[in-house]
Image (cartoon, rainbow, N blue to C red; front, top):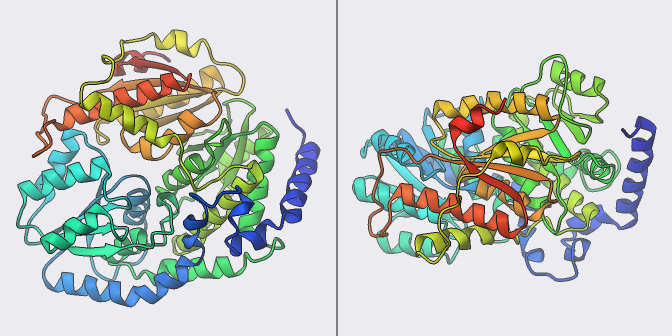
Length: 503
C-alpha cells in the first residue's frame, strides 16, 4: 500500500504537470489541444463552462412558462430521458431545494414494462405534462416512451427538450408541442446546468437561479490553479489513478440524495476509454470498518463514520466538508471542471464516448434478428474465482427498478465486497448503459460482470415499432453482453436466485 508521503509526492508531480501545461488557462480558452490534437468531439463540447450565466438569464422565461402551466392546472410532470437527460432531473426531484410551486416530477429512464405501466397510470391528462428529453432526439428508450405514452394519452400536453435540428425538435414543431432547445455545444453528461437541467428545475417549482448563481460563483473562483476547489479535486483523482487507486469511493453528500449517481455517470463515461478509467463506487454502506481492497480513493462530504473508517483503513481521502442542498449548482460545476482537468491529466478526451455505440449496435442487431442467439447461462462462481488484485465486480440487473430485488442486490453487494475484498457496483439496465457502460467496455479490463435479465410477465406493445417493451429490454441486455464479450470482458448471464445465493 502506498504511504501518505508517497501519495503527497505523486500529487505534487501531478499538480506541477498540469500547471506546466497551462491546464487551467487552456480550459477557459476552450483550447481542445489540452486533450487531443483534433477538434472533433472536443472543441464543440465546451459550452458548459459558461452555461451558468446563460441559465441565470434564461431563468425568468422558464419561471414564466412554469407559472403559465400551473395556471392551466398542470401539477405533475412525467420526465422521460436517459443518462445526462435523466440523472440530474432525478437528483433535483429528490433534493430539498425550496419549491415555489408544488410540482411533482417523476423520472422515467427504463423500458421495463412494469415501470411503463406505472407511468401510464400516473398520467391524469388535465394535470400531467409529458416531457421527452434527448439531445440527439433519437434515443431509443425515450422515443419508445414517447410512442407508448402519447398513444395511450393523446390528450395530455407534451413538451420536448432537445438539441436544435434534431428529429425530436422537428416532431415537436410538426405536432405543435412545446419545445425547449438546448446549447448544442454541450455533451449529455455535462448538460446539468443547460436546459436539460434548468427546465426540470423550473418544472419542479424551483427557481433555476438557485443552481446558476452558486455555479457561476464557483467558476469565477476557478480561473487559476491557486485556491481552486475543482483543480484540487482533479489533482487528487489523477494522483489516485497514478498510484493504482482507480476506484473512487464517494461518500455523501447527505443533503443531496442521488448526487452520487450523477457523479458516477460523469466520471465513468468521461474517463473510461482507451484502457484507462476511474470506477466510481457510490451509495455503499459501511459500518465502523472498511473492506474492499487497496485500490480505493475516497471523496467524502462530511466527517462521517464511513469516511473515518476508510481513512483508518489507509485509503487517501479528499474531504469536502458538509455541503448544504443550496450549493448543488456549485458542486455540479466543481465536478464538471475537475473531470475536464482529470481528462487532461489522464491524456484522454473526457467529452467523447467511443464505446457507447457498440452496445447500441448490438442491441439493434438483436431486434432485427441479425445477432447471435441469446447468451447461455454461465457460472458466476467460476467468474468470481477469476478475480485478481485491482479487479471489481459489476452486477448488471435488467429488472424493474422498483422491484424488491434492487434492495436485495444492494445488500448482496456489501457481502460480496467483504468476501472478495474488491469494489462491487450495481447497475440497473438499461439505465447504466448511458452511465457506466462506456467504462465497462472502454476502461481497464478489470471487471467481472454478472448480468441478470427479468422483464416480468406483463408485457406492453410499442405502437408502430414491431416489438414489445420486454423484447427491447432483453435486446439491450443481449447487446451489452455481446459488446462486453467483443471487448474481451469476463461476463456471465445468470439469474437473480443464483446471484443472491453467492454470499
